Amino acid sequence: MKLYDDPISGNGYKARLLLAHLSRPYRYIPIDILRGESRTPDFLKKNLNGRIPVLELDDGRCLPESNAILYFLSQGTAYWPDEAFAQAQVMQWLFFEQYSHEPNIATPRFWLKTKVLEDTPFNRELLAMKQRAGNQALAVMNEHLADRTFFVDGRYTIADIALYAYTHVADEGGFDLSLYPAVVAWLRRVREQSGHVTIKQWVSA
Amino acid sequence: MKLYDDPISGNGYKARLLLAHLSRPYRYIPIDILRGESRTPDFLKKNLNGRIPVLELDDGRCLPESNAILYFLSQGTAYWPDEAFAQAQVMQWLFFEQYSHEPNIATPRFWLKTKVLEDTPFNRELLAMKQRAGNQALAVMNEHLADRTFFVDGRYTIADIALYAYTHVADEGGFDLSLYPAVVAWLRRVREQSGHVTIKQWVSA
Image 1: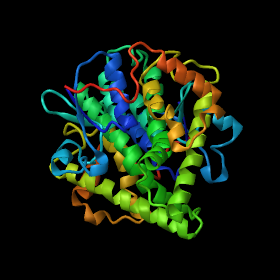
Image 2: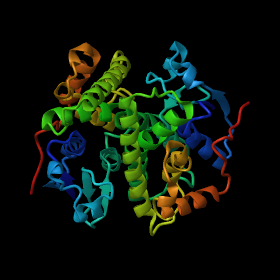
Image 3: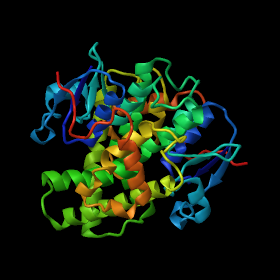
Image 4: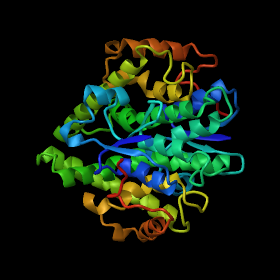
């Protein structure tokens, strides 16, 4: 398998982290999104939507969307629950992550880290709007985790992997995680899982 | 089962449409989101994130997130493919819908239909930004559908249901669908599926 990914990406990190837990070998292909490498004609054949990560199977079939990659790789493993309603709840949190969390937490981090966002009144207000919504998402997580060890079914699943990716670097997007103690405790439990790797680690053949 | 939903919602319509295809009975509970009914203490017990739709099972367990509801209800039915990679591709399009499509197509429709968006320079630029991104999502769909009947595997699945919900009313968000002929042809194929209901139809016991 090949993973097309930009090392800066938390979405790519989700796949890297699950692949590490599963000890599955893969070739890491860095794609520099700031240099437009995810929008070249060749890359658009892998993902019409021009985004990383993309998982390429040995037969050449390509799968975009980080949470679809998590779903695909986790089937039949310990990171995907057995029971139908628990599976649906994992899905609930994966969609929460892509709708309410990632656009409001990952995007401010990307803007602040890369400085790609021009300093205009509109962009300052847009950033503040996203940070307000990101804090709402963190508050939802904090309340859910107040009496739970992990997001679904008391066990570590791809729901935790998906939400960990950008939550644990939320400070880089201007968020103060100390306001969310249940989230901080959960981040520690995620880091303690066997086979954990940091966002800076990946495999390249 | 009960479906908590606002009749204006395309996200709720996804569940209504699949339930109609499956001929599954349910009680429809209208929630007026403009009057704050999805943010009451009672409703937040059903979904901490304060959003509709929510599917409530007969035993009281609640499932938020429209695409998680589609996933849950479609298991073991004709609307979910059998093969692992096709399943992952359905997921790919469900996440595309929630990340690249819905925030840019549903949100302008909501703002323009309800007139909740105050007319400020920031909001006008925000609307235009979303409409540009929404047109990019429609272009991706149009290219993907150029040589396909449905999104995945040549058959009608929950990927089509999820994407149909807000695409077929995109004109209400200021989008010109005639620019996307493959999308228009696909909308017609979706409408021709057995058991189709329109966005205005639901069941209430």
